Image (cartoon, rainbow over all chains, first blue to last red; front, side):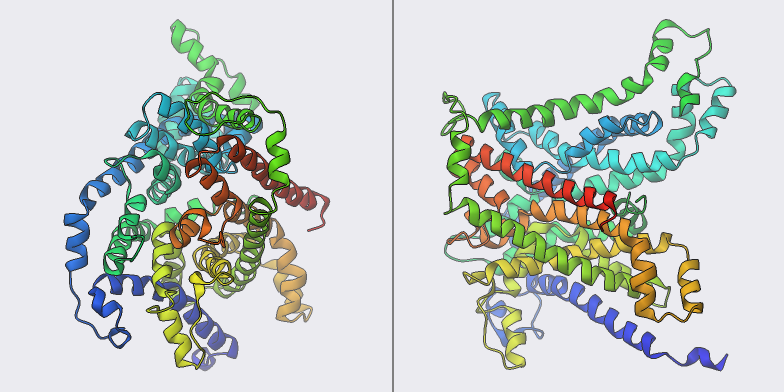
Length: 274
Length: 308
């Protein structure tokens, strides 16, 4: 028992190595947040790298003058709508594809994970600008569903594969129709899977940049596009830029930490099936 | 599966409910398939069509069918196209190599439970969910040649300032570094899920037989983990080939003034939306798509043959 307190060389090595990993992952993020509380004069002064007086002027600039409250609203609305619509379409589809072993249909949906987004944007831009829909929320939400629907189907197919069919069968013996058994038995049991798919879909939609870059208008801009307001041709407003970056990415990181278990299971879905 | 599919709903159902239950397979799948068909398959088909036309300028302009002329033009373009192919392949290859090696090392370190594990997992999750554009901006400040922290740290150990993202030759390696920073955690999570699912017995048996740690990894753990490694390479490789956000955030349009980080995705984007060369850009996209499919196919077929 006395040996338990002694550390083996491997344990020491592991502690040091993991500390290096943690610091190199966290330090840049902390640096970004720290810079967002500095004046531009302090950012340019290497003597004030760590010892500086925190100011809020960058955040007032971002939230007041740069209209960020509206862009936060846009990002929330687009991510929320794309996620809900993807779940409505994706949950039954994933169920069918899992239960009826629709391998080819599943492959078609999952192809969307492989296709470069630009190759959709060109035809979409053609069609939707002729319909004068570019710049509105409809097209933006549809485009984000291109990312979230395949994700939802992929995650939930794995989830339904792991749910035993016997539960539904016993429900049908008790007089439920097949659809009734899906609604009353399978759906409630799938809550964790649906939560995982929904959370991942929201994160990926929130972070998406390319679709909004082409399809959003001045009033429908999402946060990742709005960041570029702080990058001028001649100079960069570093304080404002770091505050804007923090406003975009800090909320999503905090949400992810609260629901860490779901995020990890969603990101690693299908990894161990071989 | 067959048992549920063949179960007939009880006879007292009304017409619609009975029909719905009998056809639920396609009823459930149809909405999603329609969305995919209308907004993914149809646009893809149109991209193929556009790649055979001289479409350019306004989206309302007339265009003419030109056969494979665009393909000839693109494939003989050693100025922009082939350098973009090389950058795409180089970016993906180098990033993947580092991500898999570092990711494997970290996953092995995290494999057995230990105190403080929670904090490491938090640190691993943060870069993964961070918005890529914001990540690009963050590194842009850190790598700024004049005020960035990177050159200050180099200064402490006596190395002169580097141009990083601003240099014509250092820009691409710097963006590869950013990709490695953000996405190695993804590889760690996937490999860790694979490791956790492994049975302990083969490893224990090898230990009893006197195999050292490296031998156990090389001859026991790694072969068992190989399917998961392939999944990690596939998922990460597809995304790395398509990298756009951090390149656009750090270098802007066209991959910088010398196109120093212009990959195929960035090139195709610029052709479409900066120059409105829809025909040529569709051609680049089709070739790009074939490269992605080809490398996926090569990887999965080698796996089936057991070569990997």
